[in-house]
Image 1: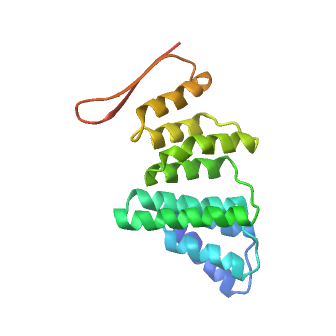
Image 2: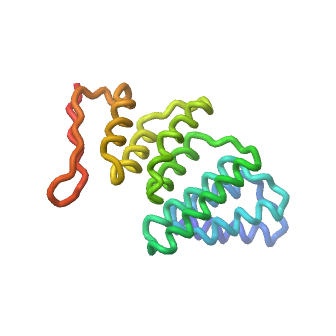
Length: 188
């Protein structure tokens, strides 16, 4: 698709002696992350270091996003490896003192939820606030989705915490006979 074509142009530019700036790497990594091309995103991320470019929060978000998206469609054993690699990347981000942004927290919550580490979701919401980032609807949705399979009461508590965003009057969550998650919300 378009991201593959962009990668070909990117490679031609480098072979011609033009060294793309960090922003070009970030854009390409973000595009490739959407296609779940973890290997290419990792290669580009490593190239940043080789070229002496310091990764930014956007660089790390693209890398983390690639791991998260690829974990959705891969075998469980490989998904666990992706999760460990994502945690390592997030730790490197901290070591490099790169401050997370809204997207970083959302991606990290999605990864933790898929890993079954639902207990870390509320602390991540607290870390967001401590970083001066107030969770919005998207982050609360990710948080609830991450927690729901493990603890319906905690997911409900997170929803109630976010009620000011949803403007709800009644909220009820349950699993139907087929085990599907059902959310019933009456808006005012």
